[in-house]
Image 1 (cartoon, rainbow, N blue to C red):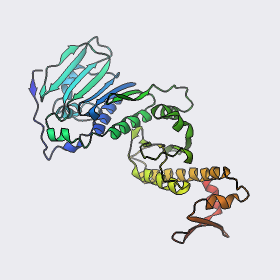
Image 2: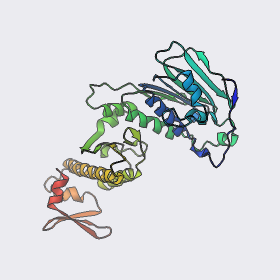
Image 3: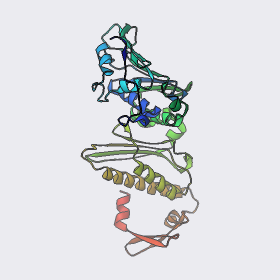
Length: 360
């Protein structure tokens, strides 16, 4: 392949320039590594990605033919992510070094200043190393105003994947500081998720976690959250993972925080980690949301009782449990209990049968 010029990058209506954020680039390259059967992923980021995004894996590797096809205009072969490398080469100086497991030599592909250099043989470790240098070198305005190159977003993306894949060793340096080093979790570990959380964050959070789970034929839910004594004052440590991929699911996030703050009368937010597994083509998202909220409410109800056990007033357990929150008042009715919101004078009656179902 001779020096082949690329079409100059432009902000046309057909290309979404804003789609290039550090977190999205990193997410795509991590998923490329996972799909390439890597169990070790090393990440190096400088100047929040503007100077360098480098991701190295020990996966199956790419042949020189694969590399050539990956930067062709009709490329659709790599992980169903059309033109992943070609698109990235339009905003950066791109270098890919890759070696297949059964080969003695690797291949080097460079795209600099919009020109594809001839692919060369080189020494390489098994797997693929992708380096993006000088992102937005051809757009000074974007480079000096990097709205989508934010440190917290980068950390959040890497931590999400480290939590979702405990069978992969993640190492990452951000702006010359190590932010994560998580070996593959022991297959004999009692709970790989808690073990991984302790490595990604810290042991204090892991030890404080309350675990809840629910499993039906079509839906699996696992929730890990810190109790009221270990409240995190930020929303940074809140993660929802759906079918092994980080997901937004803002409805559940809002519900979790709202119920938590009302239940435990706190201003902060807890750390939580929610893992959902279901067939997104067959199961309605709202059903998963409803079941997750129900599990959260059930768990919080149990924790309210645990919370009350720490109090000295044990003679009137029911009264103290429901009156610890100043806005609500509990009274007994013929069919069950009535909860009154003193702020708006609204009442809700809950039957005894519903209460029993809640604690099954």
